[in-house]
Image 1 (cartoon, helix red, strand yellow):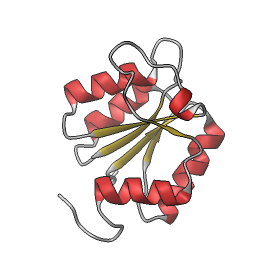
Image 2 (cartoon, helix red, strand yellow):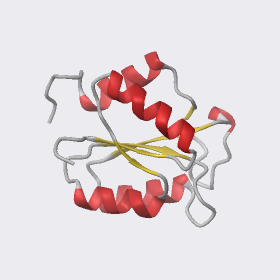
Image 3 (tube, one colour):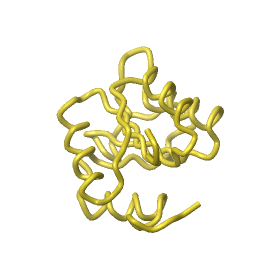
Image 4 (cartoon, helix red, strand yellow):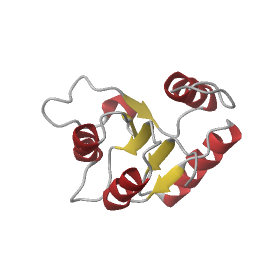
Amino acid sequence: MANERLLIVDDDADLLGITTEACRMLGHPPLTAPDAGTALRLLEASPGLRLAIVDVELEVRWGGFRLGERVAERFPDVAVVFVSGYGSHAGRPPGEEKTEVLKKPVSLGRLKALLDGHLGPAGGSRA
C-alpha cells in the first residue's frame, strides 16, 4: 500500500477483478475492497487515496451511497464515483437523484478519462 491513489469497492468479485486489471493496464494500480467495512479500513490506512469507485449495490447494510456519504464526511480529499449494472437507471436515495452513476463494466475509454481526470495521467504526478 505504498503509492496507491485509487480504491475500487465492489462485492461482485468478477467485476472487481475486471476493473482492477483495467486500472492496472491504464497505469493506476488500485486497492480493492469487497465491502464497505474493508473500504473504510483501507481509506484510514492509506492517506494517499484520492479516488474511490464505488458500486451502488453493496451489501444490504451498506449501500454504495451510504458509503459515499461516509467517505465524504471522513475523507474529504477522496472523490467518489458511483457505478452500477443499471447505470443511470440505478435507484438513488433522496438527495442523490442527480448523482451520476456510471454503467458497469465501465468502458476502457471512459475509465481512462475518469482516472486521468481525477488522478492525472498514469506516470505523471498530480497533487
